[in-house]
Structure formats: structure tokens, C-alpha cells
Image (tube, rainbow, N blue to C red; front, side, top):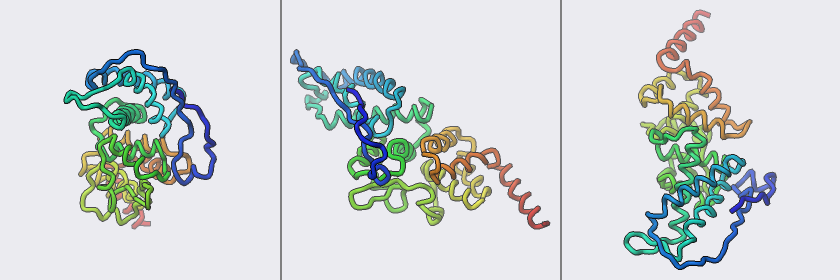
Length: 278
């Protein structure tokens, strides 16, 4: 399968909702043998083939939603060799189940690439979803079913994030909120559990020039010296476009990294003393 650019990136819809920048053409041939296979047996072959092609597509600059679609062909190369693919129970594997498996495989691959690290264990599901969303759709609104599929690939139930979460539903569309869009009322939460919640709280404290609150939050949550936390912040900053407000906040927050913690608190106290003397 090949991704072929067929749509204008500057079309009006691009700034409001997500649209593919490419069409994916699949070249097929007739199956010559009638064979069946167990899904568990061919999964390693599918993963190898997907990775081979994703490496190629990544190097060619294919990204975002196009990247997910481009993996369908390579997976079908293996899956389509068989007249039927079954589970150990004897139940046939549907096309829907194959697509869910592909999305999960591509999500894991994309996260290791954009984070520049093969280790994802220290990053919770909500934060993985946020990263993938920003990389895939940026700030666009996306149809509910497409958003649900992306969330499902990393183990997130998007309906659980409504209300005080970072996911917003408007009619049939889903959008992901930045720290600024969540607003200062978000800081009233009793506890910040996910890494993205902690990062958003830090950005809002940074906007208030409250280094002391940043230091306390990072120390309380164990993220002051957590490399995974800082890598997530850096990665989100890198995938966002120039001029984006969240990108600017992240850059400012990251710039002050060395001043957080005990040193940061002392700096704030020293600045306050100078201010009072002045």
C-alpha cells in the first residue's frame, strides 16, 4: 500500500476538523491457496511487516492520521494470505478486530518514535493518548468514533475524561483541551493523578509565575527528577506548531527546569526579599 497526497493541506476544513492529507491505495492480488491460520501464530509476522513499512513511512515524512491508515496494507499482506484467521476458540477474527490490533501496534510504534525512547512503562494511558492526539490531530476537532478508536488503542475510555478531564465533546465531535483551555478552575482539583494533569497544572502555575507551587507539585508527585515527565513535556512542545500558545507555555516552563525544586523555592524567596527591599 502507498500513501498518495491527494488533498490540499490549506483547505478550509483543516483548521477546524481533522482530514486525511493522503489517500492510501492498496494493490491486491487473488489468493491462490485456501489456508487457515491462528491469529496468535501470525501476529509476530504482522508486527514485523508493519514495523518494516512504518520505518519506511516514518523516514518519508508520513505522519498523523495518515500514518495509522498506512499500516493497514502491510498488515493485510499477512492476514490476507489466509482464507480464514481464527482465534484458539475457533471463532473467526473479524476485520474490525484486525483494525483494532493494527491501531494498537501503530500507537506503540509512534509513541516510541516521537518520545525517542523504547520505554513507555512510566507513562500512563491518559498521557499517551494526549501525546498521540497532539501528534495526530494537533488542535483539530475529530469525529467521536475516530477519537474513540485512537483512545481505545492506548487503553483510554474517553467518556471517563469528560467533565473535569481534558477531553471535550461537542455534538458528534471530540477535542482535546490544552492547559489554557482547561482554565484556572482546573487547579482546584484535589489530586492530580495522570502525568498530563500534572504537566497542565505546572503550566498554569508557570503562567501565574508561581515557581513555589510548581516545585511543591513536582516534588509531591515524584516528577521533579522523573526523566519520563520531562521527555513528555519536551515532546509535546516539539510536535505542536510554531505560534501555538501551549507550545509557548511549554517552552517557558522547560526553560526554567533547573530552578524548580528546593533551588526554585529559594530563588522565589530571594526575589521576594529584593522586591520588598526595593
